[in-house]
Structure formats: structure tokens, C-alpha cells
Length: 245
Image (cartoon, rainbow, N blue to C red; front, side):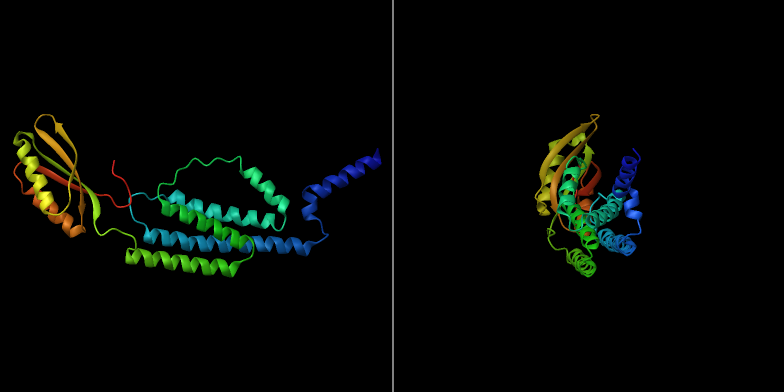
């Protein structure tokens, strides 16, 4: 019985916490912990550079601070995972099986955000496997590329999609709507009527989808529409990388 108890205790020590704290190879343990610390710190700093670039180049109305904070969590988790896996194929398959039960239901509306998620994962993988210089070079290249694309407006359309909403007196009838639509056509906005709502019998709100230029052209369009008789208010809502409901 005593022999069985000793063997059981020895087996638990080999498979439990004592195995990682044993003095058999303390240099390897210190080296492993140091690599983890360096990987976590470097991944955090590089993702911080990505986050600052994201804030500088962000366009549109959808901005989430929790999304940017999640990038740090993804990078740190990936760093630890890659260090734990190492060269063990069995651990890699076990990790895939464990993560397969996780279901992510958060929808990412901006495709650009998906790129930052993959960039965070890539930095975590590089820092977790010791490719520090490659991770730094990748971050410098990606941040520089994003800043250049944002400054040159690569991929942006020359004309902006917008919604024009005009509130006018209802007693003016169809003549007012035809005059407003003719003014929009003469400005080269290619108007498309969306809806026409009667508000309380005295006012009506008419909405068009148009194509406009920059801030100056949008301001001139608003002033032009305000000059019509019976017009109470004019609103121009630019659809820049987000949808207007």
C-alpha cells in the first residue's frame, strides 16, 4: 500500500503543477517565461501602433472602442497559444478541437475591421514564435500603407452618395416637388425619389438619393433648395462608409 501511494504521488507530481516548478531544468523554465514576457510586451506595443493608425485613418460613423481593445486581447491570447503549442502537433490539434466549440456571433460590419483582426492575430503568432523582427517590419509596413491610402483617398468615389430631405408646405402641391427635383437634376446630382411623407396635413417631407461632391457643393445645394417658396428645412446626409436608416 505504501509503495502504491508513493507511485501515485510521484505520478501526480509529474503531471501536475510540480512538474513545471521542479528544479530539473530551471534554465528552460526561465527562458520560456522570458520569451512569453517579451512576446506579450512586443505584441502589445505593435498592436498599439495599429490601433493609433486605425484611429487616424478611420472614416464613417461606426467607431467602437471595445473593438480596438479586443485587438489587444486577441494578440496576447495568440502569443500565448503559439508559445504553448511550440513544435507539438498533438497540442495544435487539441487546441483546434477545443476552439471549435466556440461560436462567435458578433457581426463585423466594416470589412476594414476584419483586416485589423487578422493583423492582430498575425502579430500574436509572430511574437509567440519568436519572429520579432518580422513582426516589427510588418507593423511598420502596414501602418505606413494605411496612412498612405488614407491620405491619397485610394478607392474612394469621386462623388458621394447622399440623402436629401426637404420639408415644405403641403399646399404647394406637386409643383413644388417638380421644381425641387428639377433643381437637383440641373445640379447634376442624378436624384432618385425615395419617399414622400405627409406630416399632419400641413407639411410634407420629400427624400431623394443623390450624388454630390464635397462640402462646398453640398452647402451650395442646400442654399439653392432653401430658396424655393414654401421650403421649411433642407437636410443633406452623406453616406460615407455607413448606411442611413
